[in-house]
Image 1: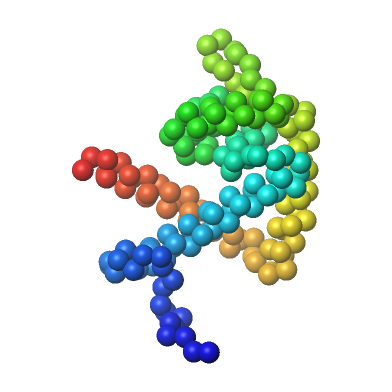
Image 2: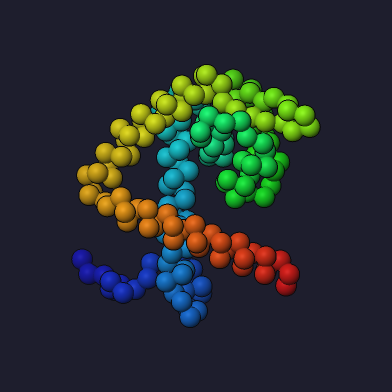
Length: 173
């Protein structure tokens, strides 16, 4: 079986975007799209394996943000941590998590804070165990260097800043 693509041909989803001055950016965007979809599928299936059905990817992310450092968080803080501007979708995720008994909210003055319940903490720990069993074992099998993963995370955070700036610029057009 022969292939017309060679090692230097970028793998992209939109040739018209790759035809600009930096096809590598389009290649990264396609890889990010695929990785994001796989990540969202994993976190939902991981939570199902831990014992919760019918959670959206955002529900899972909000749950883990609330479990982080066992500190109650405001809606604005959750949105900031996840780089989300639509507070309504996060508020809806919080309501769903409260309804399942994984999260509780309290008022401190005018501010509403949310935190995980004991059931939510136990679920997050079960999820962590499943993650170690299903994901970390695969990463270790491939001998992926932890430093490379950390460098990639830093690059993705830097790229998110560039995309945020581009979004602001596009809004003013």
